[in-house]
Length: 357
Image 1: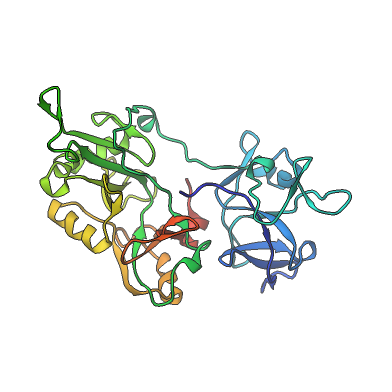
Image 2: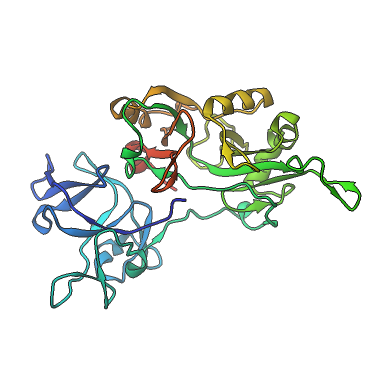
């Protein structure tokens, strides 16, 4: 599962900014471009990389320059474009040990390459505020519970995909992730107190289960598309559906009228076996159930030169707004021992620079 880290990294080659004499471009992990002042950095330096969508405490000297953009003492790190060059995140010089020049975390703990220093720097992840209708209404987790996961960044794990490996690329939609399934299918012959086990429809957000009759966006979207009835079909037995609730985020209607929500399925898991359907099988099942899926932009061999440009441009669902980005996965589900399932997101520059959340 992806978590929010601020990692100590060693800088590679600094490329001169073509339109600014005092700036250079360094790529963290080989894929995250970051603009720095040339006079302050050199190849081989250690730095704390603070990723985009972090919240930083502007009372700390490392982040004081962001004070004019702060709210209640906290500033959000955003992607920017400076003189035509895209930049994601910040590089911070940690304090040095007075004796050996090593980097410090806080007052005592030494920093080393690969360390996570988010806590030491007081950095936390930005979370968009929930509307009133989306708050609360939590219900107990079902048992067994379908797993939840976060997408890792393709810029960070570009080497997780092999050249020429068959992949499926889908449009990443800007909404709220949800989950839904019907319990009771998993143990159809189980008897409790002389009565067959009751089937029950569960719906929730990315991490929490919600009142299925409530007013949260996940419950409302599920009712609008008849998700309960579709998940109760024999074809859906034992499967959990993962989907993006769309039409709610301002500026990203995806063709929906104001106040109307929709959903698009992007993953399906067999709850008991913890296995995930290949995307082709996911599409087949969803077609049978009359469930819409996220748009497929590309099927074929992995080639960054072909795939990465697909993150830019207008949404295939609504040309009135930009595409958030793409999600890349192998044609058949597999894992990488470093981070888990190989399902990787890549945000478009146009979205990151222009988004307002």
